Amino acid sequence: PPVLPGRGPPAAPRPAGARRGPLDGGAALASCARPCYGGKYYGMPVDDGPEGPSSVLAVPVVGPGAGTSRIVVVRVRASPPAWRARLLLNLAVLGAVQGESEDVLALMAGAREAPVVMACGALEDGAA
Image (cartoon, rainbow, N blue to C red):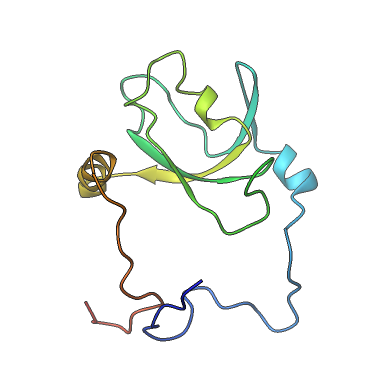
């Protein structure tokens, strides 16, 4: 795969001596399990009603992508009511998308072409 030009150090550098490979959540993961129809999801509780977040950010904890740095955006409110919580099965919910970000996700959902990533990395203070 191509290497993207960076804009500085990684946003979350690995601490010295940290091991590579998937993390084992074990008891910590079990302590934040949220039951829903068909199984459970983990992390932040999500209100799947009309007052809940429109979209959430999550990471897979079971199945494809588990233990990797893959981040999933789940459009909860835009999904049929019967599917909302079920879309979170086997994911760890990290947070909710708020404000103008919701508009960006709506544009992305209707996009006709894949986005092009121009650069990556942490920006210096005050850089745009």
